[in-house]
Length: 173
Image (cartoon, rainbow, N blue to C red; front, side, top):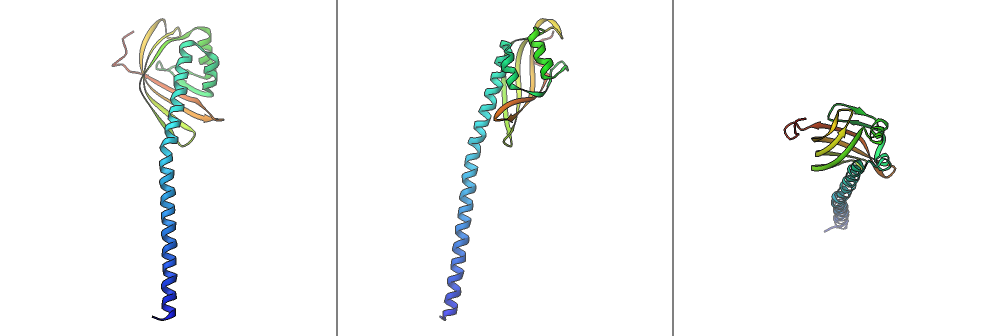
């Protein structure tokens, strides 16, 4: 074999080796990132669900300070009755006693993380509430819900709430 042919084979071998090394490295990094994604997402899901649980606990206790931290200033809050509240009007109704939540029982909640700064929760709640803006006596209502949280300044805040009465499960008024 001539020296020129041996040199060509050697160069080809080096190129194949380098390409194989780059391929293995890129597959390894991709695998590592994919393996980390679920745990990061799982952690964010737990954080969001903890904030949602803190929100319903604050509602049961009429804890305005906690609700003020959890709800974003620009939240849109749409009740099953069709009433739309801003953060200010919602907290004002709780503060005045017009709106008093007695209990919130979650049923089948699901959280989805969107990107690294948004989360959507959907599912159901069974709620016992007194809302003099709707009727004077306490009532039970089963709700389908959709709520959106955004990560702002490192904290999850509720930016939207929409609930719909589950007529199949809610007792008649």
